[in-house]
Image (cartoon, rainbow, N blue to C red; front, side, top):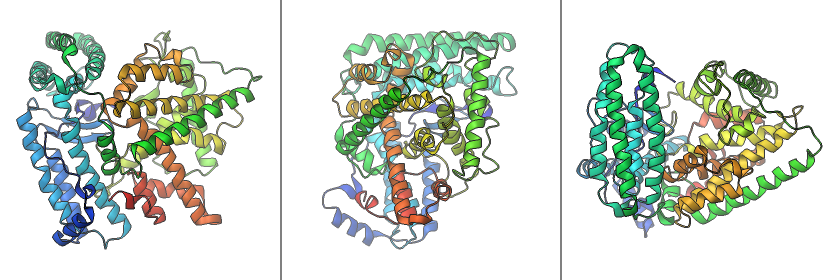
Length: 569
């Protein structure tokens, strides 16, 4: 996507600081705490919750820049007019204001509200807790060299040349800010005992991608804005200096990899609203890994005499394969009444924004090597496009039309990741069982499980890195040894990028696998509850109507069952 969204500056976490550790209702003696909270409640009005939420969002959108929108990967800054201040003092001051909002939430008593409104209350609580976790535990501005690369990387984002109006001055200002950000990085990362060497390793790898994007930017500017090329080259010199600084100090970075089990459990319960512990999640993921690997091997045996899938071998073949897969999936959704395909759920701009070829044009040479998933999807493209189109693209289209005051759209701090990634992941396999691979080469069923198995392998890496049992190197080797065709992962950009995603975005791949499991549990519960009255289309329409929120809350709202949510507060 271009335009306004391209002008934003990604900040993995822009609202931060250190503060007191608060367990809220999960502290020892929480019965008394709940009684005190009830006594302190001064409002039972849902409108007060909406007002508080709006104020909290505005608070998060203030401070070190003007945050305009939210993306799955984090908060975005746009219209940057000054270099954000990530100093300890600035962050601590910002974080200190969180207590006011938490007090305001505790002063609202939702117990008499309808379940949907109580769900909204818990969403606000989860978001405040997510803010707290970012500051109290992660504090990437003081612990993660990659945090500053995230900022620098998106300074290069902008409209396609030729730039219009004030876009030239805005880009020049952002490029000039690179040196200020790097200087802050060196000052704010001065305590090397807080920094895990694994994060330094990932930061260096990520800087390589940033350098490539800046070089591409310079090439694009040479024709229309040659006066800006020198600014890009100056920024590249600063970026190289930052990489050298990280490399020269990496041996001094002795912090612990991962957040630890105690913090992981707090995050699960208070932010992701999971009714499970680290130990329970490990068991669930291991069982799911057993299942998908077993099914993959059974499919291989079943199809042993079937002619193999023929991979595409050109840009044109790839585009044609994507178009065919999308048409096939859309027809299946409509014909089989999987869910209501509203008029706005169309793939019109899907190709441009996601998967329209593996180059910049159909004339580009076909790449000799591919990322890991592409080795599967270029043989059978249905599952990948189900994930990206039906899962993520349609979620985006729904979010654009969701005017709910609290639960509309994606949520920060990965609160909606289990729902969003879990559902997109679930569709890959579950629609296969519903029949969307019938009549196609049956080796496609193997691809479904091969892709699923890499998700479970990544989830186990997530779990064990954050518990402190595995280093980044050990997790990397585990993926190579255990993913289907893991030899394709060795030394790949894809693997380190995925491990970066889950080590720096705590729980990302675990959330994908657990989200799929939670969705299946909800479907089982709802089908048992309705019996012969269960209709798949109506069930999925209900799921979508609930919004992009944690599965525990969707299950509570759809079934009325309180066994999961009662474990959360």
